[in-house]
Length: 280
Ligand SMILES: O=C(O)CCC(=O)C(=O)O
Ligand SMILES: [Fe+2]
Image 1 (cartoon, rainbow, N blue to C red):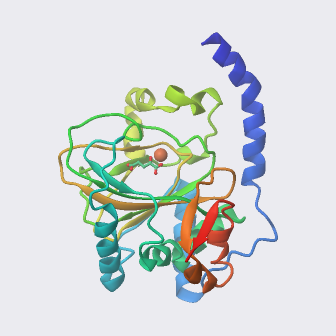
Image 2: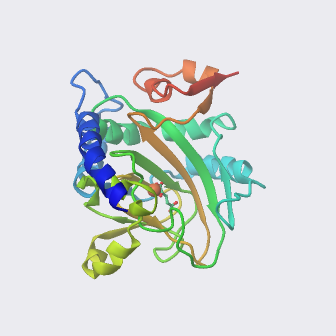
């Protein structure tokens, strides 16, 4: 433990410096994804995200778009049992399965909020479609209070079915996105914060539940503390898009023709990921 603490003392300034540069806006970046009424909606959403580390957009996707997302999702997760997470189905490579996923991930209002937050280039760095079935209550993996140890990074969660505030929702501690945790607290067990939350019952008033009607969107900075919840109160159908601006890229496959049809700066939200792959 002493060795780890010494290592943390050495490493923390280096990581803080990296994070300082990561957070610096790029004055040349042009992130304008929409205008008029849409831009005003995005402006309000961005302000909330900046203040709280999370913005909830209830029933953001509706009508045909929501139905298409639900139908594509049902197919993507079918039989995709996840070994790491009991009682769940998961699919990580869905952009090639149905164009509706890229349409949702590149929604102009959502990208405008994200662009205003990063103020520099970003792209889809990881994505996941996940169905949680009712399960025993348990605290493990992402179902404990944690931050994602990637510094400032935005995740966008789309709820595809109604989700109750005491169901298998994700909880987020507002205003915790501004804290920069030491190297030690960003590693392994150290990055789990269940004890901190137990020791501070007053934090309860700051918790936002990612719940609501089907089509609800939450955008949150995964540097802030958040926790999934497993329980028996219904399931959860959700798509998560992670928008990355530095380092934490995962390979992502997209349809060449769909990407070719995109205009800047939308195209960049695919191609700025150095690990993106275009397939026919
Ligand atoms: O699915 C959840 O409830 C947790 C999600 C999470 O930890 C994340 O997106 O970083
Ligand atoms: Fe997380």
